[in-house]
Image (cartoon, rainbow, N blue to C red; front, side, top):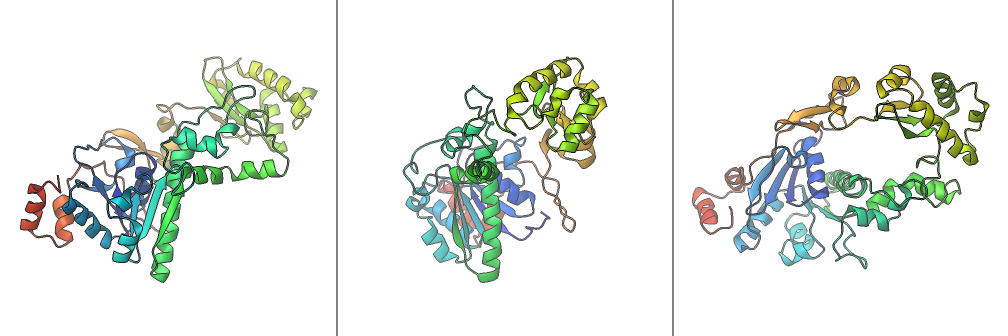
Length: 376
């Protein structure tokens, strides 16, 4: 793999969602990520979260498999695990053991609630983590119940992406000082950080503690989505005065004095009704012809099938085909190092012999591990 993380070696204990997303991020940017899969597992070549991996299957109930896992970590720069607190310690692979083996190791721990706290041992999912951090409360329309933003904010933004940032930061520290450390990445913490601007607005009195009535949460008429005559949607984000003036000009509302009250929340409802009626008179494509690529702050709301075909995304190669399906391309981009085109997820265990040989295991030892069920 090429990229700014070329030469970095990461061991990933297979999990779900945010852990694999962190592994994908690091692998996309050049790290060699060795995934320890469970017996019977299968990686889908169409799954972006499992791309760019090297795979070995270990039965973690087998003491010899645990020894192999420990050996892999001795030569690694980093580790990713997403088990409940205490599981890795019970396996004999906790931070005290592995950092004693390898003092430079960056030990990344991905959980929903964190390594400590009253909820630490409870099960949960994205919706629960962002509920506890206050984020879910802010997503939704006025008078309606909160709307989960899929699992973007907890699992991936506040979880996997936050851990990838933490791993990269700690790897820099280890390179300078030789000191490894443990990263306690909790989706509750991470989602709270993603809402930093919201907390800032709330703390300064510029945001009401209720959804759907504020500047960026569909309260304002100039920051929302609207339905077009063909049932498709457009997005408007005309916050700044000059962008709002252009919106009025492009829609023919510059002569309606009611729209002078842009920042008067008491007028947002009636103005939104006027905009909704207007946008319903034309198709999405007709509105694109009027406002796309202008300073209105406008974009069509594209479906998953449509987005890869949009000219902007095509020119930037925002999407590519891996494993026979469309996937997001690695991001961000660099001027000096170019990320490789991602490889589809491997077959589970496909790289076991090469990895074991690289650790110094000879053919007889590898055969014994297979015969004993440690390596599937």
